[in-house]
Amino acid sequence: AAVLTVTENGYGKRTRIGEYSVQNRGGQGLKTYQITQKTGEIVGAKKVTGEEDILLVSDDGTIIRMEAGSISLLGRATQGVRLMRPAEGAHVVVCGRREARGQEVVDGIVAEGGSASFHRMDLTDLSTVDALFADTARDHGRIDILVNNAAGVGLKDGRVDEISLEDWDAMFASGVRGTFCAIKAVLPYMIEAGGGSIVNIGSMASCGGDLGSTAYACAKAGVEMLTQYTA
Image 1 (spheres, rainbow, N blue to C red):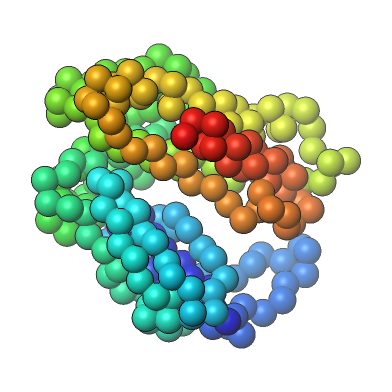
Image 2: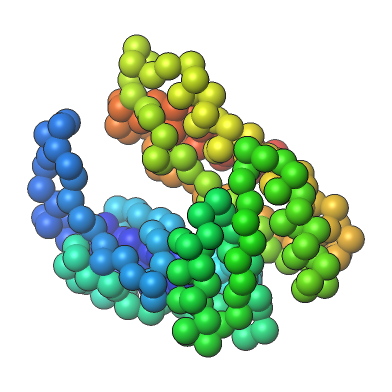
């Protein structure tokens, strides 16, 4: 078995499970990917045996199917290999609160021959969400794809008896509420354009996992159900 890891700029790899040693609860964890401007941030990780069929969906709607066993086996601290490229003609609008980090992603897409730009947006400020879609539609004519990837992984979390109500609310504000607001705001533009695709990034945590990630797991479970009802 191996851990399949995929990044936002279309890179990925498999790493043998044996390279991940068991850590104590207070451990710092292990580095699983060499993240660079070229690769972008990690957007997905999954345990695979090599026999599975993997579907990769890009921001521009490109879908690629491949066997997990065909993806290169590489060590933990490596960049991976190119798995897919955005389709020609697509423009990616990268959004977030931190412009410097967003611009790094933009630069990586442009360096690979793609087209991208940054737009500041904070999911807790609905005026910036509305502005994101209004400006994108104005500048590019239409919106075909929305990828909701907010996770709140940097927020405080813990067991039910540890986490505060404030931290619980903060996790749901960025995860469930933020995803709902983005979907609701973009739908009129997609309906006007005759259709579109919405990709909500989930997590295996919603199926059960680390007891120290209660709020995160519940928020991702909410995103999963929201995705079903939106569809």
